[in-house]
Length: 389
Image (cartoon, rainbow, N blue to C red; front, side, top):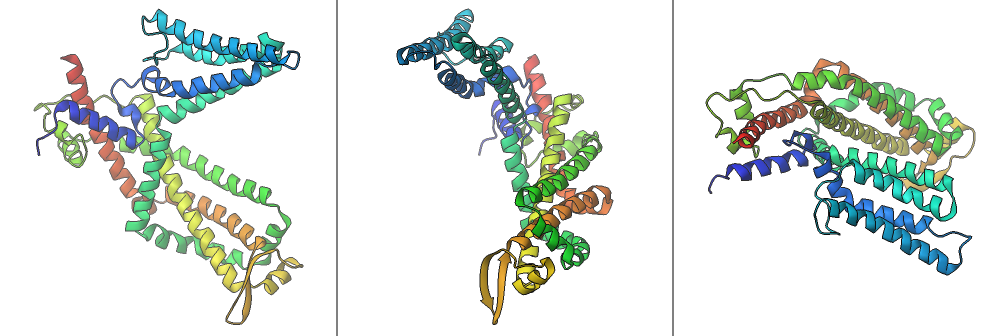
């Protein structure tokens, strides 16, 4: 098979970066070209929907509301056409670049419709604020490749579990020493019985929030370690299994040093590291939840749960096993959820505080991130050289 051309290798490497949730590694990555243009259909649909919802008024007859909608639609499409006309492009062509003016219009124009149509200032302010939040969500989600990043992080976690059933086999015993002792005391069941599901969810969410904040604090040190300069010989070897491998073979004998990570690239790497660690922690928490539900169902029959909480438990599923009545109770699920959240927090602290556990659980992540950074070094060298010719 013929080796890919430089253009093909560069394009393949850029797709590879995006698939790994690292779009900011792409040379001259631009929000106006690479983020907002992809969001134009969604933003247009949202703007038209807001116009349809806000233009009618109770003070208008039916024909007046219909006319207001038509005029508002025409205003939105007119803004699009004028923007294209100023750029000497077909009136209703999809824009190639979306700048500050177009983004501001998306916020302002739909917000003005209820104000002009029926003096509904509150509705206008709410519409404008919602559009600002939507733009922020779209920018973060698209610019940092949140969807492919999550897909890659989940795949990485699944590969670890499949190849090292070890993540769970080695992590759970450390947690079970504490959790099983607590599980067989009456207090967790009593707390679970007293609390509603929303409060249990808040408690579990608090555990996960603390775990996330603890992991985020450690990210700068992890990214700094990953970004540590390696020799070109090592970098070229790391790129062999990547799409940047063919580019490495075309490097000059003395290639220049690759650019340092920019602020956005640094943040992009940090988000990938944080997302991957979060998936690993969630896998451990889910495994602990499943283990406790099975253990509790088999060893805490409804009569014992009745004794612990002082009244009949809320049995969701009942069955007989070896002439013994067993049940999955609401109290058991709440207790398992609470202790699984606690386990996730404990595992996070142990994972990021113990060098041995970091080497055991995060070694593969570090190697894959170094592979991505090596591909970036080779890719940028080729892309910058090509841009200068």
